Image (cartoon, rainbow, N blue to C red; front, side, top):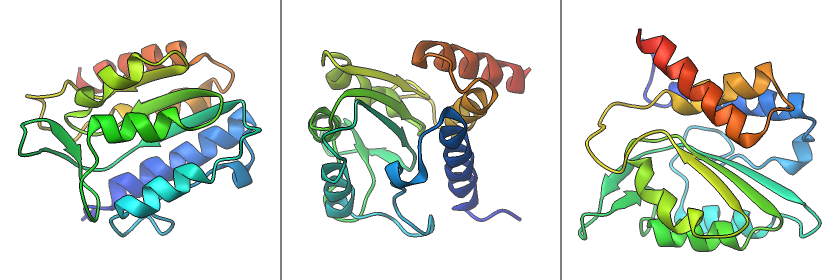
Length: 171
C-alpha cells in the first residue's frame, strides 16, 4: 500500500529526471522538503526562493502539496506556519530572477493563477480549477512525463501534452 507521501516523492523524482533531460544541472534544482517526507515550513519555502541566483535567466517551479480553503474561502497552500495565499506565492515567485514557468500540481490550484498571470514574465498552469475538483490531480506527473519525452518543448506545448495525457489516463 502506498503512503500519502509516495505520490509526491514519485512526481518529485520524475521532475528531477525530466529537468536533467532538459539540461538543467542538479545544482540549480531545489527540492522542498529535501527528504520529500515532511511538511515544508512557510519560512523555509520563502527562504529557498530567495537563494535562486540572479544570473539565472529562467526559473522553473513544480509546486506539489495540499491546498484548502482559508477563512476567506480562498485557496491556501498548506505549509507549516501561516498558510501561503495566491498573493503570497505570486510575490515570492515574482521576485525570482528571469522568466518564470510554474506548474501547480495540487487540487484547487487554479486559485493561484490570476496573480501570476497578471505578471509580465510568468507563464503558469494549474492542475485543477480553484474549486469543485477534489481528487488528487495527476497533471503534475503527466507534465513531468511530457517534459521527459520532449525536453526541448515549450512550456505551452508541455502543458498541452500533459493535458492530453491526463485525458487519456481517464479514458
